[in-house]
Image 1: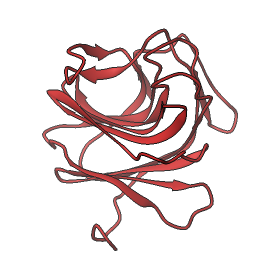
Image 2: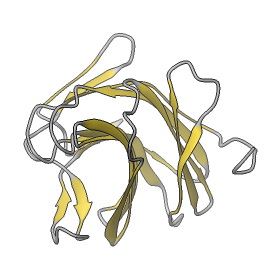
Image 3: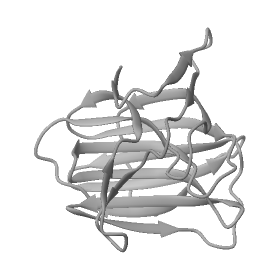
Image 4: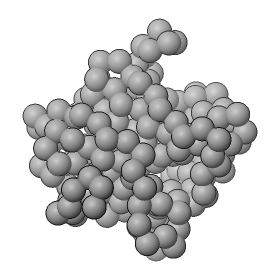
Length: 187
């Protein structure tokens, strides 16, 4: 795997887990509401073409506004999806940003996400399904279904940012990429 915006501190553990400490005021965002473009968050990626399912276990030491960790699917600086947990109003909220030239942001309000949790991103053609589950759960819940161009291989992997500070520590384990399930959206 390779880095997009290598963080100042990171290490791979013997069990394959990845521990990342973010740089100062890092983020992935384009235009909407704030009027700025940020493309300096940390992404540890592999390239993948075609349909796939990526899964990961994520946890973090969430403390400051917008601390975030999860998975990212990326074509380029203008076309990407990041999903995971983001710290907002003192809670860990499930979050998903879909960017196609400009970013949108969706969250699950009134919810304090488990820490750690499982995240799954499935790409089938131009559709991307984002799902999550607490550790030990038998099944995943859908967070978002989004359009995503399928023109060329994409970057996929663990992502983290800390737009308000440096030093957010994120933990990633059990990262896998495999074939997408042969099932419908609600099966």
